[in-house]
Length: 322
Image (cartoon, rainbow, N blue to C red; front, side, top):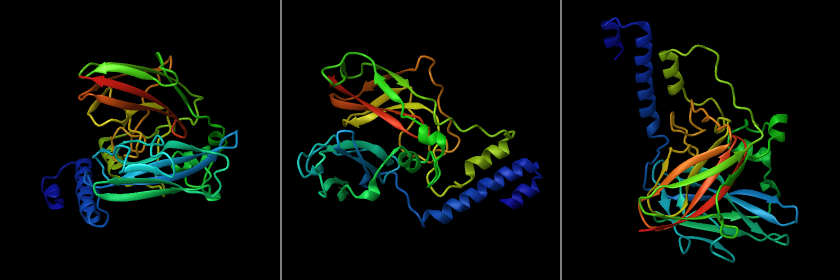
């Protein structure tokens, strides 16, 4: 490769770009066997993230998960393959699992007198059973700084006055409610418009872009450079993301939504991906998305407003008829 580059006396910038491509290919081949990754066929690892205490003395256990697949979104209905013990099997857990690591996905309330008992979440997927155990162990206490650190908004073990004063954004889905639930009805193939207002305090401030001029060569270097962090890195900046939380049919969101999961690939439309920039924030704080469903059924859609450090969730139940 290098001989061909030299023989044709290509400009030095192009030589550098081609050399980077070659080195990247060789690096990928060398590391492929050391740490295999999978597009599909793998399992879900439920994760206990920690707990926090509410003002009334009760607690919430916080769970997430790791879908070992990079592309396959698994559906595991509540029941023998997706359940909690002791007590009710359904504790509000997802049944539609997005790819890779999803942290702080949902909370399960438990009473103030929970004591030293365990709450157990069991998930079986693609023939593999995995279990997460939740307790009130002191080293699992979660606060806002822990969330920001674990999701990559902060460096490992660091904080700042800005991060400590940050408040989570507030998302409010517009329109009628049925009791405390937000419910919509739609037919297969029709477009459902969802309008949500997001209010935020502007913290943490988005990290400024680099001031150096970007040339094609330096741009490619940024794409090919490996991460320089000991923990997952996340770009700070407000965004709203709609996704399927429960429901098995294909669902399309227009415009495409930023990913709430840790997709670390370049140009993956994910805050964890290199070169990602937050979308513009509407002046009135109103975010609009059109949703279509390919199959009838009952779906739960999940809206997460995320400022980089903290987040707030809302859910909409959609009854889809033929």
